[in-house]
Image (cartoon, rainbow, N blue to C red; front, top):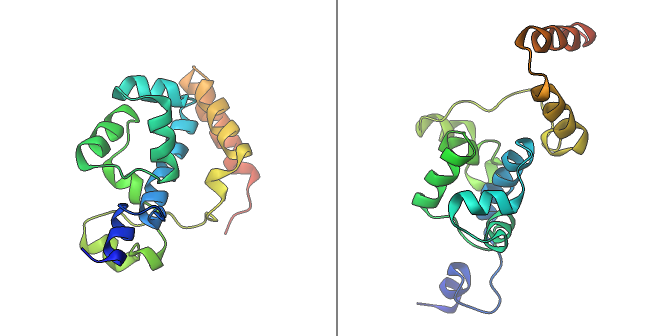
Length: 149
């Protein structure tokens, strides 16, 4: 194995997280946060320490296929969720997603919109409304306040 391959595979001191691993980890963090779940609680559900969860979320440790499957079940999302919104530069273009059978990315969201604290707090508050009829009225109210296209 060449030194370049060693560095890319993580066997060298100069290991830098892969952009794809970092993206997948950020999606794990996003979903965990949206659910109001701590790293410790996620770790317990997966049989990991919270430090291992931290490493996954930062992209320092790669997430294997079986672990990704476990994460999708615990976080209640399809596996494709972890690859959603991947930049074209990382192979996340529309043509690639379509060829792999992934759904189209959502339009109308800036990259950082879903990562803002305000967004996370709004989603958490919305899902804390236990009455479905009230939750629907709140949803309709918010939609009525936004400009139409």
